[in-house]
Every structure is written in C-alpha cells, then in structure tokens.
Length: 285
Length: 288
Image (tube, rainbow over all chains, first blue to last red; front, top):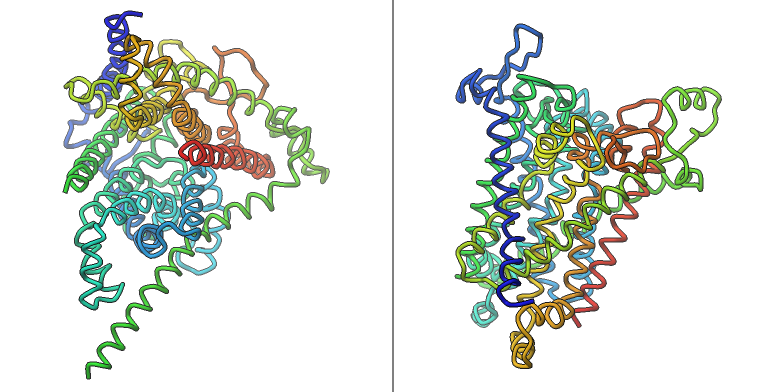
C-alpha cells in the first residue's frame, strides 16, 4: 500500500467521528423541533407540566432538569468524603505499596459494576434501610438515588485526583518537611494548593458521569413527574423520564422526550468540555 | 506552650492519617455488599438449565411459584442476544477504532485530527440513554422495527471512542525509534504501521478492547429502545432480540419473574468483573 493510499484510508476512517457526532446533533435537533415549536423553547424549559391526556397534552422539562441537578449535586457531596481519602491514600500516603494497589483494584471493580446491578442493590438493600430508618416513607427518592450514584462516581473522581496528587513535585514536599511540617500540613498547604485545580477538574468530570446515569436513577428515584420539594421526595431525572416513557411515547410526547435528551446531551457536553479544558490546563502548569 | 502546640499538630496529623485510612477502607463496603448480595441470592439459581433454556412466560412462572417449585427456564435468550449484538459491534468497532486511533497518533498537529480527538471525547461522555435515542431514530425508525442490528449499532457507537483512545494512547507511547527504524529499513508508513507499530501495540489495544466490551456488556438503557427484548432464543438479526441486562430489567419489573433476577445478575457481574480483571492483569504484564 502506498503512503498516499494509507493516508487516505486513515483519513476516511477518521471521518466517521464528525459524521457520527454531526448525525447525533442533527437527529436530536430535528426530532426535538416539534416540541420546541409547539411549546416554545423557553416555555418548554421552564414549564413543570407533564400531562399526556389526549387533547390536553402539555410537556415541560423543568421537573426533570431539577431532578437531574439535585441528584447530581447531592451525589457529588456524598462522593467527596470517600474519593478524596482514596486519592490521598493511593497517590500520597501509601504510594506504590501493596495496600494502594489493593484499593486501586477495589475502585476499578466498583467502576466495572453495571449500573443496573447498582440499581438492584439500591432497591433491595438501601431502600429498605432508608425506610427502616424512617428517613422517607417510600424509600425511593432523590436521596436514595444520589447515594448509589455517589458510590458509582467515586472511582472516576478518585483515579483522576490520584494522578494529580502524584504529580506534585517532591522538592516542594521535602521543602515543607525540612521546615518541620507534619504530613497533614504538607497535604493541606502543599498538595491541595498545587494539585487543587486538577482535583477540582476530576470532580467536574465525575459530575459529567452522574448527569447521564440512567438505570440506577430510574430504579431508585421514584418516578414521579413533579418538581422535588426536598431531598427525600420522589422525582424523575432527565435520563430516567426518557428510560421510563420512551418506549410507549409517540408524536408530541416522543418529541418532548427527545428534546429532553437534547438538553441532557448539551449539558453533559458542556460540563465535559469544561472538565477536559481544566485538566489540560492543570497538566501544563 | 510550644510543646502543647506541637502535640496538637502531631495529633492532627495522626487524626488525618486514620481518617484517610478509615474512609478509604469504607469504599470497599459497597463493593463487598453488592458482591455478597448477588452471590448469596444468586448462586443457587445457576444450573445447567439456567444457561440453556429461555425465559419462561409470566404465567408459567406464576404456576411454578404457586406449586412451590423453582421457576423453570433461564436466560439462554439473553446470552445468545448479548453474544450476537456484542459480536457484531466488536467486528465493526475494532478495525474502525484502530484505524481512527492510528490516524490520531500519526497526525498530532493537524487541525482535523484535533477536531476528531475532541469529538471522540464528546462521544465518550455522551450518556448511554442518548445513544439509545439516536440509534432509535437512525435505525429502528427507518427499519420499521426493533432489531439486533439496532442494538449492535448502539453498542458500536459506545465502544468506538474507547477503542480509538486506547489505540491512540498505546501507539503514542511506543518509542519513536521503533517507527524510525522501520522506515529506515525501507518500509513505507503503512507497512511499518502494520508490521511494526501495531504488533508492538497489540497488548495495549487488546486490553482496550476487553475494557470496552466490559463497559458496554452491562448497558441496559440503549438496548431498551433498540433491541427491545424477546422471550425466545433467536439467531436472526433483523428481529427484536434479548440481552442479559435487558432480562434483568424485565425480571425487575415483573413480580412473577423476580426470583430470576439474582442468577442473571450474578452471571453478568462475574462476566464483567472477570473481563475487567483480566484486562488489568494483561495490561500490567505487557507493560513490564
């Protein structure tokens, strides 16, 4: 094969990415168009009605956007107290030891568990626990979904944070030790300031993961189409309303679900782009 | 006074160490809890029949429960469906992904390559439920029906960015001298890629493919809108077909079939985690 042909072959295969991604955006926009045209873009975003009685059809995305943001942010809050210690354990305190590699394997396995199995575990173990503790009467809801979601994103946040914590130059740490700093002080005064932006970006990417997580949330959030008024109440996320109703929807409802898909796609794309940009910047500095 | 201050600093240091150990160790709890629950509730369902027979109807299952017998049937329809869809996705995703990855590794400064690289990230971050919607619009609507083809297209789109990235990264960390030596011997770029670079990168690419498979094999949401599910063992690719994760979702929603959840989950979990650990082990071995 000549160099020219080889180059052309590689180029042509690489064209698949713009075609697929362009196709994704094109298909979502054209199929969501009906809903946006019927209700108006801003009205669709801010309306909280979800009514599919024939003749009085009214769809709005606000409850699901709220549900997604609540589960994601709550999951982030629950995730930090575990992922940060894991990152410090693997990347600093026990760097390169057997214990670190065991913990690394544990988080790898956590990342490998399919989301439907997380959902089952949440439904059959965590939900009864929450009912028994009298936190919420029905057990499922924003809180339950976020707790399981938090476990699911720990591996992503931890592995990237570890990488940045490992990259903190040794001479900075040694300098602090030689001035009499304790290890806790080195972590707080050297590692966090130096690796901070990298650690932060790993959480941005973890948010990107949590936003689109479907099965776990669908099985645990309670599936009601209202704006959740507290963290223990039930609701629906953008992904879970699609998973619940896509199969039975047609016409305007289908278009509205695809419109919600488009919004979800755009939010995740923006969050991921910000995260990647921050990582690039953190790596250079 | 200074001694008390030093003491409190040392105490803080110790507290930090212990709390880090404690919270890091706590992350093992959900893993053990999930493995334990699935193992304990699922192991007695695994039998020869569980892997060779299709899912029973809800009526048959109800009768069996009423008679106090174990539910007849298994998940053979799901296993066959998963294998067919995964097989088709792998056959198309591996060559495409490797060529795309080779393109990205060879053209680092080119503008189009940067766009492709950015789009790879975009696709990798796209929620799987959206891949499901897209495949529904692209394949299910024009074909006027759910099919194994649609399911495998969804899996293909999800595997592609993973394989591209692992190929690109493996090719990039190969020493430049390897490629230069090949070119100096008179091979053209295609030959050097095929005979020198790809064989040298085989380990990394293979691991990447294994990880990509383990990532998509448990995917449920995209298959719900594309493969739909089917209670028969089917070998045709233009009709609705089942998959193991789809069956788990079905069992979850059907009170009569709930007993089958754990066996199916145990099978899926063991399969995914074994793939995962094998990939990690091979990566470590090949890196040495």
